[in-house]
Length: 179
Ligand code: ADP
Ligand code: MG
Image (tube, rainbow, N blue to C red; front, side, top):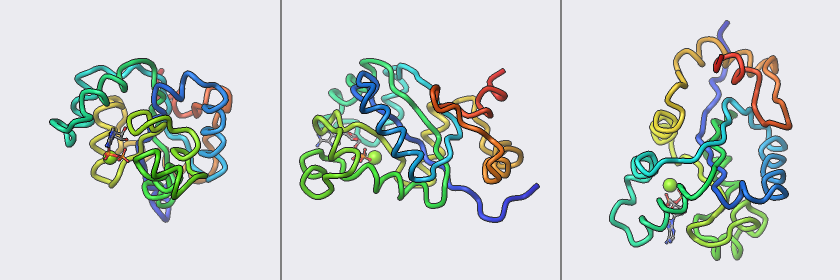
């Protein structure tokens, strides 16, 4: 079965301070679903320093790099692969600007505008391009096979045949593929 328009995938992270706040976590889940994203994968992990280093390699040497890596490894994060039409730009638009002060000023209703605490603790991550999304998925979802997902699950996802368990925020595909 082939789908007509390929779904775009993006890698999202709900950062450690969000996971510590159930109300904020719930609100971000609602934003994800209200905006029509399909949750392809979702998992709670503690990101390791080598993973964070690789993930943020473009920022090595910047003044905020150590702070960023330390924060990202400080506790559990929820990592997700989200799918949808223009998922990458749509998720970044929902997140708002990187810097929280700017987000609060220019996009107060964005995720970062509402739930960001500082430039480091800015609530969420979103890939900035298809290449980044694929690279980031390879780092954090090592067992996710994009090619086989496109061949088998993408169409089911588009047809609404993959159901999300709202409470655990994981889809049926997760359970099948992780067995
Ligand atoms: P984005 O997450 O919007 O793609 P960047 O890729 O530029 O932003 O930065 C990656 C992460 O590094 C940001 O989400 C934020 O947590 C942190 N960061 C970026 N710029 C700063 C800064 N000036 N001060 C502190 N932390 C920063
Ligand atoms: Mg970035």
